Figure (cartoon, helix red, strand yellow):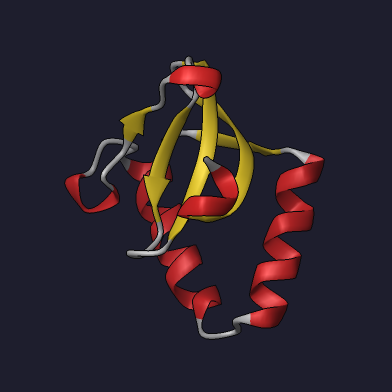
Length: 89
């Protein structure tokens, strides 16, 4: 199982999005739980980013929302940002 560290900016983005879209909360936690068990589960569509975000990864919460993260080690990740595709890329 993967250990997650939550960046301060990530926490802020999460609170803002969840307060505006409460129906997103359950889906978010379902995907986080799935990610922590298997970060490359096909449902998550985990992928490397390129360009200015090279070295960073992302996975999908739903069609619109993404979590941006970085592998700190094989068993630890840093969640960096959470938002819509246009907001986080």
